[in-house]
Length: 278
Image 1 (tube, rainbow, N blue to C red):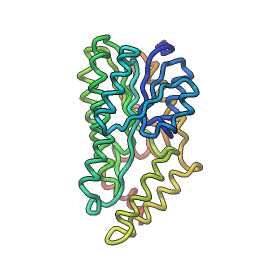
Image 2: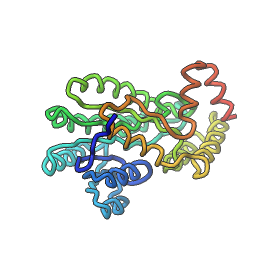
Image 3: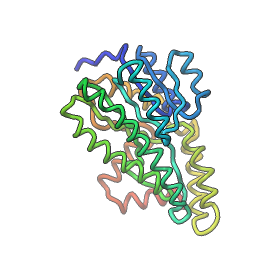
């Protein structure tokens, strides 16, 4: 099947100050797209600006920031052809030790901010009856680990939200794609481990916490984790496909872990996961 030509089209990548988001943006620029990049850390997108990206400071939990970005895109280009919802992070710690305020913030970043941005960009896509929305989920939207309840809850929610959105937008010719990365070499591990140890490194869950911290540090190291490029390839594949798949999976552990959970059931999956945090 012939690929769509995305040269000259307009894209937005959120969470573009590092990791996968930065790599997505570079790849889309190389394809000749006009690329908006958004993140809280504006200075960390200077390299993307030098390549031609339009960098905007945006906190995904701030409605005013989101509205301002959407208005800028509409004023300058009339709307988007491609939205890559990549901004997100992971709160880890025992459920008992994690405040509900922290849990709410996890949902604000990983789900509600993404949803608000998408809502505001949809009318232009719908009027043009064209566009692709790529939501970066995680293998954590299909599987689970101890101490990751709130992170997994947001990714499970994003999966269901994306499925509903796909059906709603089908009559308007808009594609909705979910990408489920495995363990990728990004800042995720560094952002996750320290706060997790602070929350649950002492007390009833300390042994599990320290074991998971050690396993995570090894998994997210450069030698063990997959490079961001493996997910960038899927973003480009979905962006260029006239009829993209609803889901793409790549990155270390993702496909086998999802397979085991689906076909062998929860008890077997539980045993495999817990064997890693003894």
